[in-house]
Image 1 (tube, rainbow, N blue to C red):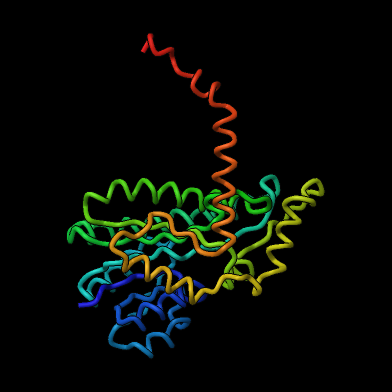
Image 2: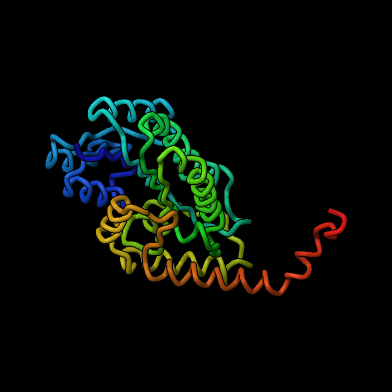
Length: 280
């Protein structure tokens, strides 16, 4: 039997394109969305291999129900893709706590709760693959989206730890770090702070306007991204970190250079923070 995928956030963007790619490739899938009407066309095309499940990742009862429905329908869940997420624009000082907390509930805690619900099924089989959709903003911080960065840095750290915990159990983990793709992230899926501080006009505000301005014109193709994720799942040795997009690769490599520069310049101070060797 083909593998069974559970994909969150399938109404638009990565989730929608990935669901279609997975089903076209002959896999079975739980296609999750807050509104199942948004994915009914996908289910209609693949009535025997797809099931629509209602899933708001901030609702624990819906998480449990969604996982149960997919498992009862197909008897297993082999691949979990945590794709649901939102954005938020505002300088750190401008950002409104209730909006930031809501974003953390979706981007991080929702992802963690869905994963915790699926892991027992994977542990029982000693196999599985968890795909967490983060962002290049989970590796590199950018002005104007600092708290979004924080949610995605959390996903990266969480994924690295999870990979080390589950590797002996036969469960693989990949965290995906895309750059700009033609999804709704920079459009309706990202709110703006209602607070504006003039001192951040040249940094946070400028970057926000740049990101908003190229919404719908990003170089990243969600269809190609979906194919890349399927390729990673099908690989014998999938990556822990999967960058998607030229800008993601460039940003990550620049980050490595910045880290190396600081580490090398401050090596003596770093090493000097330990007790002397003869005292250890």
